[in-house]
Length: 276
Image 1 (tube, rainbow, N blue to C red):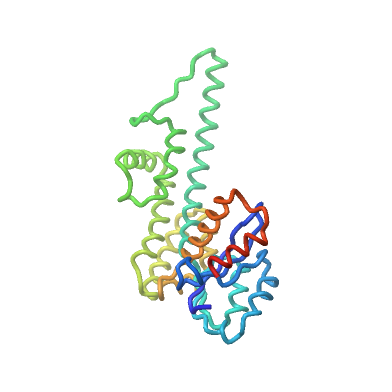
Image 2: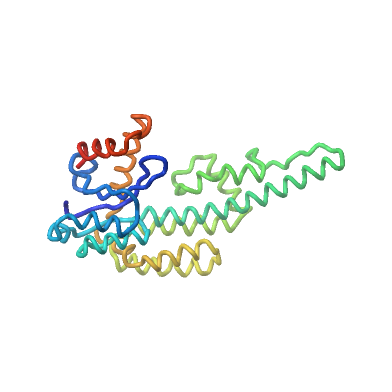
């Protein structure tokens, strides 16, 4: 079983989800698969995991998971003495999605504005010539091509991305504010090992989010507050759910090697022989 586990879900065939419990100690090799159970319904998963001896399950000290309530319930019922740790990458992903939503909103507005100008030019029997920025992008193209640079930290930008980001932030201060908020959250995770300091930094970050007035960031804020304790538990050992995600990727690669899953029972038999 092991003392440090990860729990996650994976789609094996035709979008059917399975709950997977893995042992971090074996790093995706033989012995890493503790359980693989069809579905994500808490009652069904709990029923099967509880077949493992109670004393063995009580030896689990820590379990990493995402923010799904079913995963929390499974962990609480099956591993009663384990500390739950919310995966940092799921929290950061929500912040990045909130940032991208703001960019996408402005992109739709730019597309609509450009379409109106094109229609107006047609009515007047003129040829529409878009206004281009100094790097050769139109406003619509600037917003579309800025997608990937917003995922990166500033020091990882190429020269072209730095130029594009400068123009984007000048034209859309809201995107700059949202980008800074997402990077500040990343910095809290990267730069702090002490739970007390991280708690203080998160409190300052909360205030900045509230001052920004962004609805999607406030939804993220509420999500973090609901999962506050398990998020802070990350700073004890800096444990993530990366091992579970890596194992899921390994399963998907295994599946693609055989061009899909024709017989699920036999596929699961193979997985347990290789990884259990």
